[in-house]
Image (cartoon, rainbow, N blue to C red; front, side):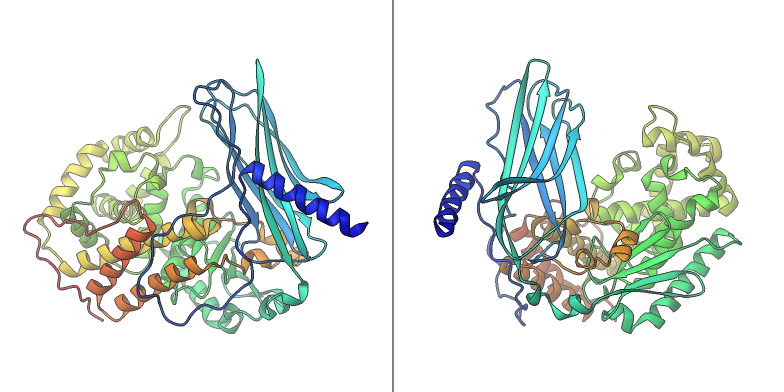
Length: 529
């Protein structure tokens, strides 16, 4: 009888998945990476997220599940604490007054609700994201259907969207030994409390990491003139998230090792994130983040850190960008800062802060920061323009015009242009790789659960595991091959490899050479070692 029930359940499960348009995912077994990069990367496409069929064009009510994520990423095992993220969107013509979203687990005895939440009002085109962190512990190994259901209610009707996939849990004995042995630990340096996982590279190199953090904190605090240290927690994780560093409240979340994966300098990243930690204290306003445009907060961090990913001459690099034709007018860049090409935005922001400090000195710049105030309905440009007029007596257009004239007068630097082109293309390829094969690592939607809860409850998987697929491995290997070429000084070969990778991945911002302005000497492609 039990055998018959299993066969019936399997048949019903396949029928349900077929009706929902879901496809079983690839096997989740962790395989070692191949040792050599592929000679050529075939055309790659992102993994599709199964959703309900879209409503008929012109439908009054419609709801779609546009994103679903299951954490931890990568292989799953019995005993894992699972988290879920769901993003739903109103794709109809009429507003929705509310609704509910549920995550269910299918089984022979029916469906079990694992997580649920209410949906707010959604205007046409509006989206809402729900996250449930560590809400369900997988009881054992095996395969089961995971089902997402979103229901919306309007004034004259209702709508529903469904999503489903098969989830496979491996036995606990298959858990990698490094993760099985990993435990949270902490140590104290002069500046900070360091939280790390045992058995990882961070534990092995802890003394050096603590020294770097102490030096970064002292440098930033001295530059800001802060006499009293702030409590700072530095959380070292092996999982690569974003570009390697985040500041969240009193904590810095940093990937280690990172320099053997990205062309970055870890002390520079430490200084950058330390600036974010200290900015509000320096200004003397606890809610400063809500008032400062991102162009200013990120520009300040780049300026004090001495570069974006690594030490670099900001003004000379900005001049190279201007000649390359990639410049974004500041009045555009300040609005929706993070939506613009990342490396361009951060470089311009850092160089702009450097220009303001050069024009008026450090005390005047601090007055400018304190004058930034967001009033109801203000855009970022309005906030910035008002403060510039009050302190520097010019609007953003006037300051930028004179600044650009000064940049045009600087002598061209072919090496800065070559390196900038490489960095821009490398990180655009990285972000496209992340959006395609590791979306929880993409910096704008990175999965950063509460590390304090993780420490309390002994959860390590979310900070160690990453997705694994043959296509993703090939793309990653090609990315690393390009990084290695640039590290050897062959930037021309690295750029060519990255452009080929970008064409395969479908990079949005950089898919070919960045055009040079007439009159700029073409670099020979080799940077000094």
